[in-house]
Amino acid sequence: MKHYEVTFVVDPVLSGDEIKATEKAYEDMLKNEGCAIVHVDEMGLRQLAYPINKRSSGIFYCIEFTSESGDMIGKMELAMKRDERLMRFLTIALDRHGVKYNADKRAGLIGKVKKKTKGKAQEETAAEAKASEAKAAAEAKATEAAKTAAAAAAEEVVTNTETAE
Image 1 (cartoon, one colour):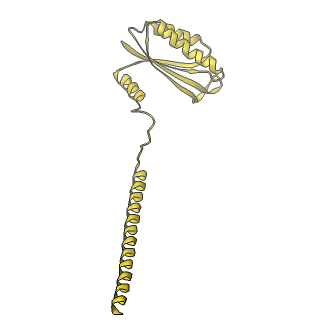
Image 2 (cartoon, helix red, strand yellow; image 1 turned 180 degrees about the vertical axis):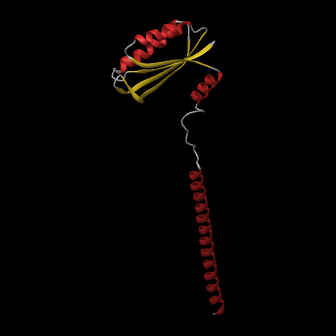
Image 3 (cartoon, helix red, strand yellow; image 1 turned 30 degrees about the vertical axis):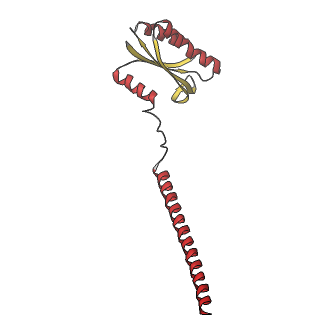
C-alpha cells in the first residue's frame, strides 16, 4: 500500500454547501477508485502568501489516503485542473517519515502546544495557599492556647484570692 496526500485550496467566494460538496466530490472519487481514506483535514480559511486569481485567502483541505497503485492520481489531477472551484492543488507520495508525522499530528503529539493543567505558576500559587493555610492554623492554635492560658491564670488568681481571705 502506498500512502498519498492531496492538499487543495477551494475558492472562498463559494457558499458553504458548495465548498463541502467540492471536498466530498474528491473524497468520493478516491473511494470509487479503491483508495482507503486515512484522514480528511479541513484546515479552514487561511491567508495566501500571494494572490491567486485576485483572491488573498482560500479554504484549505488535506486528504490523506492509501492506494495499491498510483494509477488514479492522473485522473484525479486532471479533474482538479478542470475544476474552476479549486485555486491550487498538490498531490504527494508520503514516505514512512511522512506517514509517522501525520499519525503523530493526529494523535496530538505534534502541533499546537497543550496547556499543562498545573504549570509552575499554578504550583507556586498552590504552595503559597498551603503555606498561608498552615500559618493561619498555627495562629489559631496559638490564639487558642493563649486563651486557655489566660483562663487558667484568671482561675488561679481567683483561687489565690479565695485562699488569702
